[in-house]
Length: 165
Length: 153
Image (cartoon, rainbow over all chains, first blue to last red; front, side, top):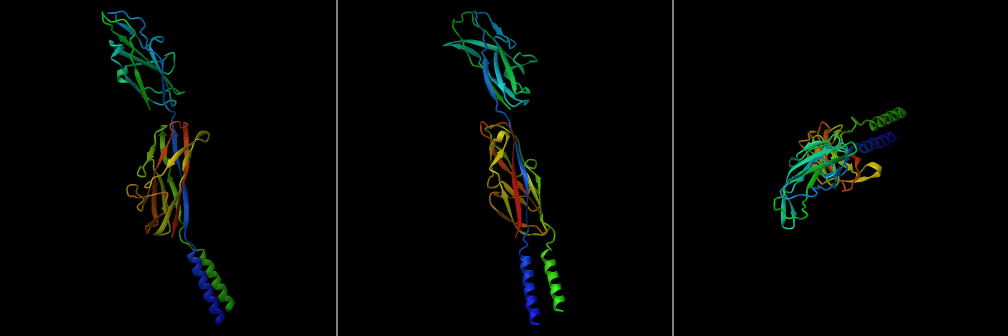
């Protein structure tokens, strides 16, 4: 009888101990993902060059003029839409003298040859898509209107283009 | 008699130690999706974002106290071994006893958090985070693994 009682107590202790040790734990995992795009880079590749201008004679440089048109080269994430916006001067300056610059025109294309180019109005901006290699070329033209008594000199102004994704 | 009793008791011990009821199941439902990230621009995913936040579902044997904990990555890994900083704020995890993203109790995923699992044994945890790309961050796809553990007390 004593032996059985001792055995019963031992078993009871084991049962209690075994139950206490069975706390459940489990886990799972998920993945965080992100896709980093190529930074946008813009360079002023070519100046908008009106060359020699005569007083009283308006002169236009077309955006399609590959030699004299202003050009911006854009690089970024391939095949990604971007938004172009411009800050366009109303005058060119030579010291204290100014000369009006008006009628801005623009063309953007995926190739430096301007093949397949799309015309746009710089004052309104544009939303082209970068090429499959992440390139875009943008040309700007305009017209200067020298007065009949326009002072001689070299006149300059800055055209700024901003590109964002 | 003694041997029969001993055999019976051994059987009871063996049966009792292996009987645990329903298992505790943790399921990774949805990953944390930052999508398109721009160099130099931190991107945040809120734990309340129904599309992009991470989600784990808990299915336990019963209600009761449990401890929630995470193993959180410090960075995401991308092309050519590039790494990008990943951070978790003090309220970037949320516990929902109703499994509803609109009804969460926020907590710090960097610290163990004790909750009361409801009697039906089900609950959910949602996760947000912030990714911090460098200005010269290499372009490409980045990933990281988030591990979530539940321990019934």
